[in-house]
Length: 270
Image 1 (cartoon, one colour):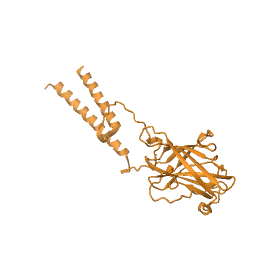
Image 2 (tube, helix red, strand yellow):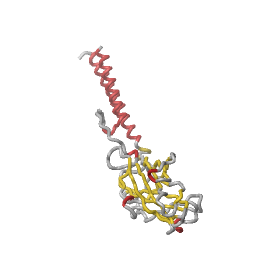
Image 3 (tube, rainbow, N blue to C red):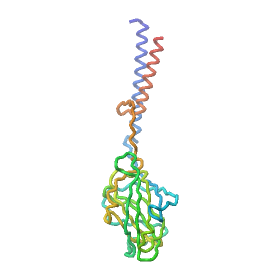
Image 4 (cartoon, rainbow, N blue to C red):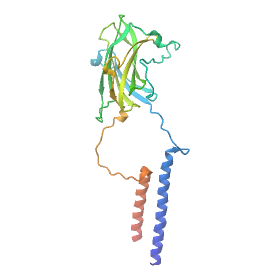
């Protein structure tokens, strides 16, 4: 072997060794990114969010007021048993020392409720849209109330997901049906949900009536998931380069290094 050939081979060995070291550093850095202080980083509980519009008159044939609200809540509670009725914490505008459970009234009731589910972009049978209609009645000629609605994931505890504005109900009339149209945006894993409606006095926040899956099957076993989990399935042809646990940047570094080697080799031949 000539001196020139030996020198060329030695340079190639040094270059390849340097590239291997760089790739090892890249893979090691990605591994450390998933840890903090040598320990795996725990993912934070996913917050819940939803967008709701309301129809206070005319039922589903009525017109929404054009406004929508974005509601944000803590992560979905899935563990533990649920009670027959959940008592919402009273708003600060009411006396916080008064329990809503103390003022249950037989003068108010929810006569009926129905649900239409919509928006299933990935066609897996689970929806992120809830169109809820309910009809509240009273023995009085007119009363001012509001409602809170909850979801229970796979039989777990109730989780508030929307609140109505104050609205009026007129005796036992069906003309005061109320509609909540909600899109679950995040924080709701795929599964079966039950739905609960609770009605409160708009004057002092006292609990008036509840209506849930025990009252109608319309509010039971609703197949739901949030918008972020409802991703359409897109069929496409792609070429993936995988290098074990190294991930994307390690693969990019390998391709860049290989390209550099090819260029250097062509230059040396020239």
